[in-house]
Length: 263
Image (tube, rainbow, N blue to C red; front, side, top):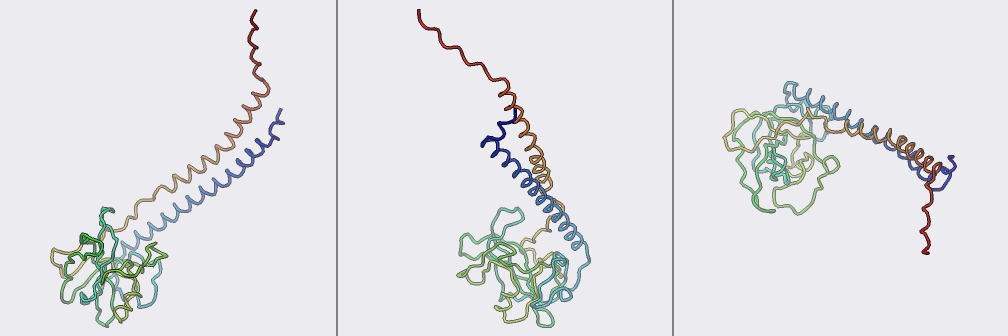
């Protein structure tokens, strides 16, 4: 009764089902691992945000990449802004995630002569691809800044391709090594994402970058269960097709009666 399963059509169908099941199981595991990574990342970000602020020079040194475990830790720095070497970081979105503008990147000169890059926040674009927007002036004199420590951006880590020929004082990546070559001075690795300034600056300042989302786990665990459900349904569907084929072959439909010949 099951000899039909040896036909080319059924052999190919069976092989396809045998290939689909492990592939779907692996896709489910991949999504579940992404869920676990997201949970671990959220826990790390939450712990770092809750930790007390540390002087930035204890966390970062020139030319020494920071470990992932320090990402989003609050750090403090005391110095004077170097507004003459300020840069605008292109293609950055506002808190709404849609409006395109710039991040304002201003070096802060520390007491020992080192610099730390401070991302002072977001400003809207200047109305054109090359037009520079009006940038709120950085606070004058000595200030104490507090910010979230972030790693240097690279094309590999951010997906942003660095290109040449940009307007003066505009960049695509926030990278301490690149800025060190421009400033011709040592720059601490990574940068600070500004959260607070003391003394309080003027009201007209860039829009501060919001705290990173560390509560959402994303859809990964749901996708994992979906893939495993599909993997379980493949053999079920294959069995239903086999039973239907066996039934149809066991009970063939009668041939239709030939039309009656005219008398």
